[in-house]
Amino acid sequence: MHYVVVIPAYNEADFIGRTLDALVEQEHLPRQLIVVNDGSTDDTAGIVSAYAQKHPWIKLVNNPKKEPYASGSKVVRAFYLGYRQIDVAYDFLVKFDADLHIPPHYFKRIAQIMEQDAQVGLAGGTILVEKNGQWVYENFSDKDHVKGAYKAWRKACFEAIDGLKHSIGWDTADELLARYHGWKVVVDTDLPVRHYRPLGTETGSVKIRKRVGNGMYRLRYGFWITLISAIKAGYLNKPYGLTGLAVMQGWLESWWKKEDFMVNEAEGRFIRQFRWERMWGKLKGG
Image 1: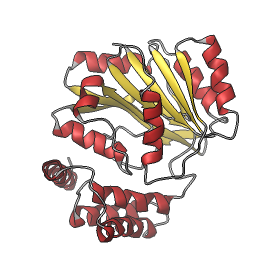
Image 2: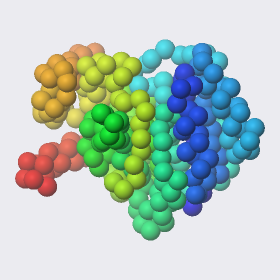
Image 3: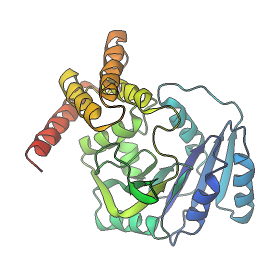
């Protein structure tokens, strides 16, 4: 199966070389790799240009105007700048971060997963971060969730969910909507994805959790599901307690402002039912 990779990048000079090395060394190469230099002030563009000169399937797209953070939509805007530059046929589409490393067989395995089951619409590996010299799972969400740092959508699935939402929570919305439309989501725990910059290092865990609460409102989770998620976040993540309060603060602020939802009422009902079933399953030890 053919695939295309789009990488939004802002000031990634310290990491992107290793990421591009990992992609160039894939046993199953992408038909096209598009890096969107999203207003970087470091040498991100120069590094990518050097790789593009050696590999004609790598393309650099420059967005000279660095746009401010806008409720999760900045990365989606950058992604679509690259997406619109795709000019080859492909079977699955990949959104990839610029600070990752994957094994050489990674995309060969992703292609096999999709070839073996035509209902798989979204797939990925397991994210790891370095702690005390060891690479361990980055415990930020459920282990069966394909992280926003490395999404691989079957083309038909991406079209069925109408692409990505320009909002915080886009990397959860895509997965829930894929399930709503009957697609399977697969996480291969034997595919490690090393994340050089752990989640939250730029904006802090509390700020991220507040935006998580914003996303839960926009996804129509409802008060009680959000409250349970907030309690869990406050119990499991430092600074303990504050992270949970931040989730509820984000949800309540969005509720008070009556912000637009990302999904319609039918999709919202499906999402709430899915989350309730998932919670009951965990309580039962499933």
